[in-house]
Image (cartoon, rainbow, N blue to C red; front, side, top):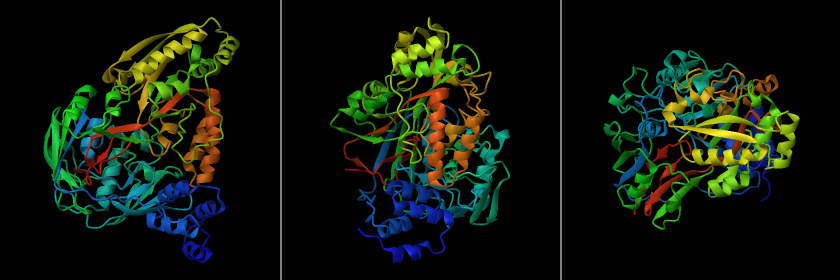
Length: 554
């Protein structure tokens, strides 16, 4: 299709220089349509407007994401892991607890499988010129299950709780250095401003479903969420029994389209195999997250459909950069060169993963610099690096990790591969509680181990991965990595509002991390959800969320 410059000129009027630069990038071919839609949604441009721009720029109509609505009235039954702690929006961190909370509570915006942000409790948002202030316009007429209307003071109170260090919020990993308590400000009943510590080009993701704690609950909340489960969502609580399960019913006062199912039921399981048997036996309709190795039989079951989402989820292999043999970056690079990443993706993950290149920049991110060469297995070069570092004879070391998903098998593969360069690894595989401990330095096998493997869930932008485990003052810096050049690059990337500026900085970060290798990113795994045949309209996210308002059964 040809470009319609008359319509493009009309659209450009009133747009900011940043928005017009993005439109120029699409017209000139510097960015793809996918990148344009994703970044445009981040800047607060509506999806209909982005579609009109794409049409005028000669790309034709965007593919429709609409699906035919199924029959109403079903009961949808879900198998899930057991919530690990009391369900509290401020502190909850495990997949089981987050899944239950998300059934009743909503976010300002939602990060979809395509990483495009879609409005939810906020109708729109926009940055100021340098990205230090983001203004969100709230949806009117939204009611909490307890009856009151959601307004700006509820948003301010919800985010302030998460940004307050005194609350030991799980979301501090997102907000530290970005947003302080008191800097979320009410403009009027339906407008909120976020005044940030520094420019942040990806900030809307920090208050979206990408930050799984950032649900909006009443300003009056004082704790004890399991007694109220008060939210704004399409379902409201019917019954919750700790360690056993939960059920929800349709919220007929919901602000949006009413949910199709009459009820949803969640059964908690301590292991994946009983979930698989329950799915195959007809006791449940959905397994929220299915590991690849444990679920091989399900992947080939004709009575089961598998929803596979590309994600940035991964398992980080960290190495101490300040002591022991891995203090030398040449040793760390040697270890990274031992990994056969193609075998990891094709064998361990059964093709359900993308190769990692020892930085957080996964293939799913539009800002990833794909021109940076992929690191491959090279035992000869690894041996040369070991010799240059003065440890040609190898050494002994302990690799500590968690018993979760495919991590134990991944650890065994690493153990076998590094033998080829003389490294003898003793594996210390712990249950998750023992591995994470108190999740603070000095009280955590995760953060204190000289070498460890840690699971990191999906994020729609790499900001948290760039900051928490890798910046000198990062709250999850298990590698003890301190590099001023890296810190400056990470701050530059996080502050960039422009996609092309993000890409340019991403390439520099990718190259620096290949040189330093404080963390090995071997692969990024797909997020798998299994459903029984005939179950339709299920919308999982790689953040362990499960949107069921459009679900139906044949």
